[in-house]
Length: 115
Image (tube, rainbow, N blue to C red; front, side):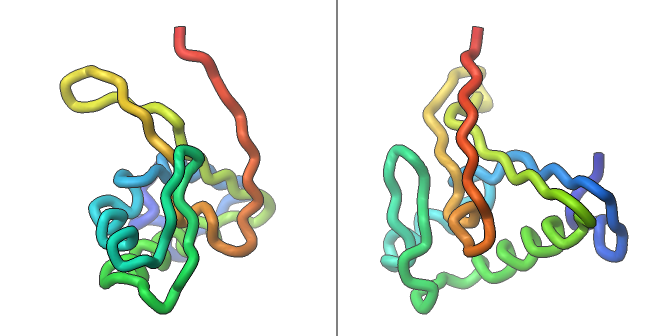
């Protein structure tokens, strides 16, 4: 396991990129995307509707995702959870980042029940 920042120039057959969740990746940029009208948000996730309204910082986040995706020779799996644990231990609803709606990414939904 390693950070994407450290992965430049390296390749693997399969790459897993976990945690591509709204407000986790691309982080606080999400609120600026929504207010700029670049993306729409629903309970099922965010999706990009107008790339021309992209706020500063999102291009760097997209570039970082590109680095991670292009490290895979055969397969890449980008995951996002529908629930996340906060710093105080509570659970809150989460949804996939708008970055998961980029062209070329196929969405596969899998639900795992927390016990």
